Image 1 (tube, rainbow, N blue to C red):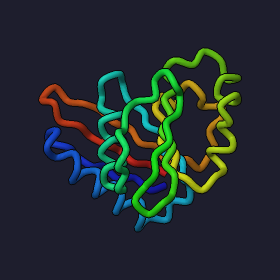
Image 2 (cartoon, rainbow, N blue to C red; image 1 turned 180 degrees about the vertical axis):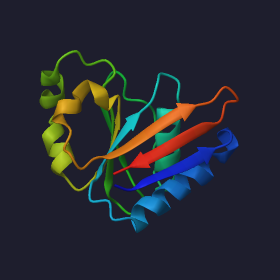
Image 3 (cartoon, rainbow, N blue to C red; image 1 turned 45 degrees about the horizontal axis):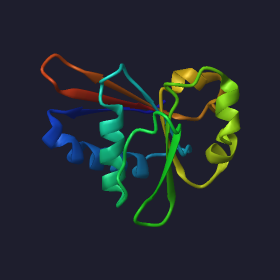
Image 4 (cartoon, rainbow, N blue to C red; image 1 turned 180 degrees about the horizontal axis):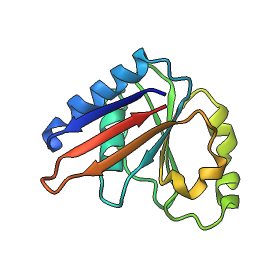
Length: 145
């Protein structure tokens, strides 16, 4: 198992942290394109995913797909990035209905918020990303695979 912790001192530090994250993943032996973002409400999952997309050259506006469940972006290198938010789903069938298996088996990156809502549908080889906030406002990003 590989584990890395990235500290984010404040919002001004988030782009550096996103670049460090991407560099770490690209140099690692991670085999998955699925990133499951765990964290409490307000921990900064969407904000960090936005920074990751910016670092990957996404020019579109990145926002949480809370009501649409999935947003699609295009990285500067042309590959798709799928941003999921499963907070509002009530049944696993809703995940199947959007074609989740096709997204997961495709060539794009999948950034999944609230993966605990669909945990039984996630492949075993996901990259687990846990984000936690401290009282000072800093964040810790723990990457495990």
